[in-house]
Image (cartoon, rainbow, N blue to C red; front, side, top):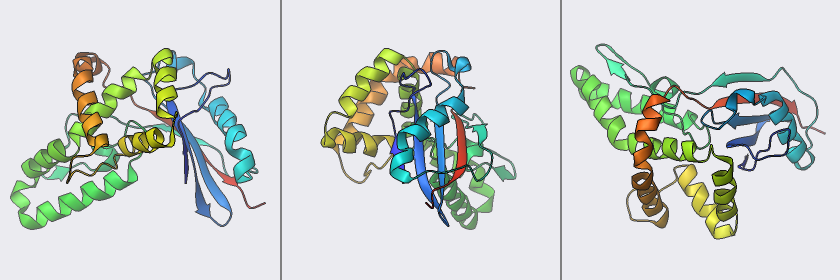
Length: 229
């Protein structure tokens, strides 16, 4: 799999978002781009031209050919107020468990589904309260910090400045990957975990702004492309 943080729009300017390529079997690859709706002028962004730009960027290395089917677009929820109730719980995307840094959600869907099953086996009558407590403890701190950061990088100058630091050395790139992909070891104190904690506290004053714009969500466009040649 290849992930990219230097996605550009048709004008060549950096866009606060991400791109990815991963094999889908039989010579087909899944290629896509995502853009944060917290960015300025988001309504003017064309995801189709952004995907074309990204394909031109990564196409030679992957040997990208023609589209196997039409590109598909959707929005990803970054925040959900109600995640459970009497007789039901929401998991994965439906519970807002989507990483704002990179749109990742499959692993959170699997994890949250497993947690619900385990809680149900332990005590069917307490799943509602227990699940809410688990999500607040295990997921909300990271997602809250990620949403704050997503708002910050929606400002082009800050995006360029932060990317300049993040991509300056191999060490900083690995550090940024650990933070953005939520690969932090929670069993011991690490530099990535410390930086995430500091960043979360420093950006917490943004929460009133985010509460007014919590309907914002990343938009993604992905397509299956022939890369067999």
